[in-house]
Image 1: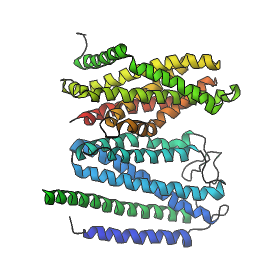
Image 2: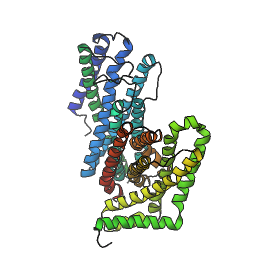
Image 3: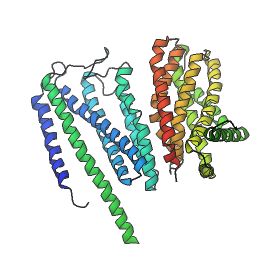
Image 4: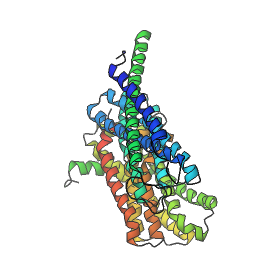
Length: 232
Length: 227
């Protein structure tokens, strides 16, 4: 428990290496998009961080279900870790989107359904943290957290499918585009390679961070119990 | 109630209890109604509801009013249970807890619908529009159902937290967005007199989320109230 697992160190190295490699590929290997130019390169990290955010909230919902069945607090620490990391990556997703939108849509932000639903998703998980902050008893906090992670995740598919339901200007790179979408493009094979690699890199970084955060949560619990023991 | 299953009679008893308590005090309904009317009046100043602008935003104003008033009712419905230890009494009863959830949710739905059916004609008279359209009434029913289904579950969590009064809207509004958005769009469609094929996607989404929220809340309510 106190010793850092060897496999985690391996994962750390893999995460750093793949992240650096992805950055290098994006800047030196991926071709320049003809219309949008260099700013299009934000796409590789924008989609990858959005994917990690979604994955993270899915993990939180799944461990929520497991917690409600097993009632084992170790699943709760996974849930909190997943939600926190998901919030961070969704924020990266929104911010990189804004950076891209400034030159392409000529505005940092527009009240587009895709953007709005993504932000609402972020608020769901901020509410999750506020809910947890309002409950002291660990077992009840875990139960409520699990329930809210499950219920909250149900509104996430709306975010994902909103580009298909509403009329939106957010482009779809995979699948068919709304005629009103602005800044759409077709990926060349090289772009697809870089895109898939950055998805992989972000996923490795995600699992590395998740593991660290779970470990941090467990160590914090241990410190807490040791402190109680010393006081007693 | 001898012909009913124990589940149905337990659910009926919870509904009956809530309705009777409300009939004696008339606290919740009157608060929700006055609040709803105030919201509409404030919107009138805030948005300057001109006849030409109004048509497009009536559905939004209506649903924001209903959602706010609904939150008031949901908070109260669970807070009274928690305050005097009534919830513990309910949980001690040897009945399925899902029956308690459905009873509370159904009573909340009745309150919300009652508010809606007073607010609708009033809004119609104040702004000289016909709000009594069969399809629109169905959307009000379905939208309120979805909102109350997830709202009752979240309210029973919120009352057990330290920050209970401020927590419910924060928990409920982002989660209820799919229901509210589809209800607003479907209502707007009916008010604008659009054809069924324009309204149908939103209607379907509304029904889907009603089913999802009701069944999930039904399944997890047990773990929200267990001690």
